[in-house]
Image 1 (tube, rainbow, N blue to C red):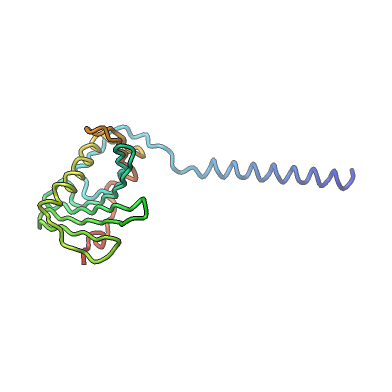
Image 2: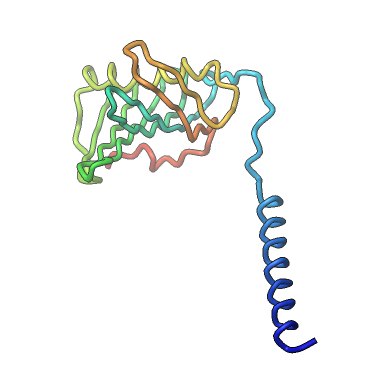
Length: 172
């Protein structure tokens, strides 16, 4: 055998070894196997909840990021983040039901008091509606449905009883 043949054989062996190693790595690194749980989770009885929503209406998608503690109680506190998808402003709302307080900030600026009687029906009812829809969620990655007005709703990144730091709901 000449040197050229040995180099070709060595190169082929390196390619085969690298490809086999990559295949094994990819196959063994798949830790996100689907859940076999088919029983619905009682979201209304959770102490905390965090999820994202993509709501598409007439071709425009709005993303909401919800976090809530004391779900299903009169002490419900929610945070809603609405990140800009067009380079505009980012909005954050924090509302506490039992104190009737509502706050918002734009682009992480100063917190501003909001009118609870107009903010709660919007954000509180929106969260409650999503929680009611999640009553049939069976812990798969996402939950999708068509809203009454024909909008496409996808709820994802769903975390039941996550530890939510108190700073998540601070408005000062």
